[in-house]
Image 1: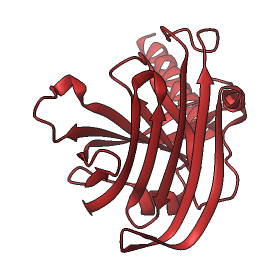
Image 2: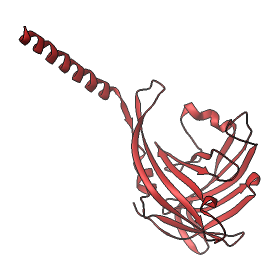
Image 3: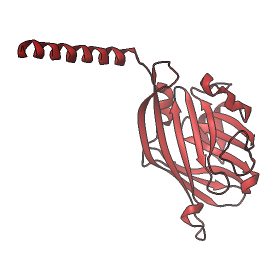
Image 4: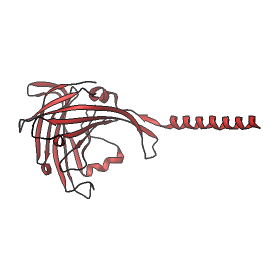
Length: 236
């Protein structure tokens, strides 16, 4: 009797393993584009130094962490999406500013999308989301998942130019995309907002070193900066 019981338990165990294996095999893994990963997958030790051409203030951005995970989709598509997330801190060289005045940024990569999330520590309680900021390899239009296509109802992203070579303050950069993002967001479109929020931003991104110039115009925060890269150190 014990022998039959043990055989039954063994059979159930083997069936369970088979079902689990089949379930794993049925999930399609969707990796980050290899070219995107090669160009922009920055590791801790990476930093960028920018100068605001309006105020002359110097800001430093550095990568605090880099995580590479796969996340299963929840829309019944049986896909597991690779998601590379870089946490980046911004510090300003103004002694009178406290730590709370610094900003937090996230670079997020999925499929061909280079996304940025910017945590404004003043008025905007949630994130400013550039989703996607750009696709890579660079293309003349921005594309994302159909599930979030309605995001463009509040945010408009436009690829203005793609340059084979671009010069900024005497420094030459290869393969540069110029992208504009703008939005006018109210509480009905984002329930986390205390008040309407708008922005009109411009980015220049090089496959050599990342963001080489960004103009951020956020009226509700009295933020108007034009950061231009001064120096950098890239770790991949």
